[in-house]
Image (cartoon, rainbow, N blue to C red; front, side):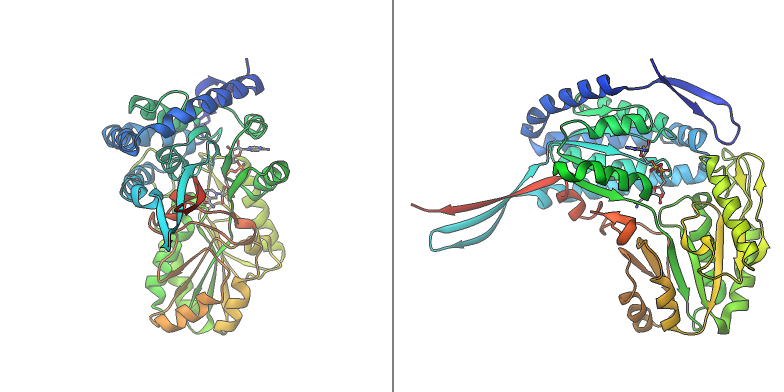
Length: 455
Ligand code: NAD
């Protein structure tokens, strides 16, 4: 049997070796999830909610150990692992609070003996192929509302976050979710491919554009509901009326939190020429204060890159920027523990990969602009469109800029922020479909239209 070896990216040590799924086991799991689905959907919603309430309590009870597991397998700084788990609780609370109203049958017309209703039925069996960078967040954005709305779930965590996936499965099963209702699938790309071959009613994917595009090609002709939450190259514009120190502190964190491995990391910054120097000085001050080190240490801010291959991407972006004339202000090299020095460039432009391709590491370019119009044009010069932000005390100005930017989420005086109350979606190569908000509950349902005429 094939196995999956799980290494600690910071130390290189083998943590565990797990048996992998294969095409035959995935087919059997999909069949089991199919037969279990009607009974799960037939249970009262209150029963499914009770399971999730118990799951939430178990996350709280085991939070320290779960954080340590996530840090060991991903290199995420331990304080950020705890933040993710604490943040998850609010997301679960949102889903629990909103699922009844979001999925109740709605009467939308009732006149002259004619009634029209919308009923929210589960999709059926959904597959979730997930990423490693926020494994609890991106996993549970799908798993929790999918289960609450009566679907069974085939969950394939990333091969870089499978111990976290095992923990999610263990806690859901202990909370009363039957084994065939939430089914863990272990492995890498091959197991993801096998999942797509099954009879499924929805596929919810979080990961890179390259993989998302392959999945879209495969599933397109099969009419399977498909959601793709992909990458980004998220811009922020700092206007000349902004406080450069406040904007710099917030954006340095937005760029480098989680070692820069967030889908909504700030990936490029445009600063009005009038405050450019003050902004860059403050930005550098903040970045030089970021402690790089052992992810298990509470004081560490920059941990390990989860995949060592990403170090090559960062090296290549740095070399390309330097070759094209950018100014390297700090960083630009690998550090022990599969880490990368927080890296800041000025003198950048859009001929450089650093400003157009996702970096997914603690690397940032800061470009000077002369007007709002120039900033808007540069912000929109991308194939992605996940988030975008503006720093300015002038709300009307910020709104005017953000209204012109193609992005699923826009930020005024903040960045790198996700709310369970708001839909999470992207334009262009950042994907299609959405999670979170009440729409992110209804997306796991099939709205059935009832036309009822009284005889
Ligand atoms: P990835 O595409 O390498 O892998 C994602 C998942 O797809 C993994 O589980 C992997 O095993 C699986 N997979 C790989 N090849 C496959 C195939 N051919 N068929 C089916 N499954 C396959 O992405 P990653 O490195 O895990 O994640 C990083 C990317 O995810 C970044 O681009 C990041 O921006 C993006 N991301 C987006 C969001 C969002 O909400 N938009 C959130 C987190 C991460």
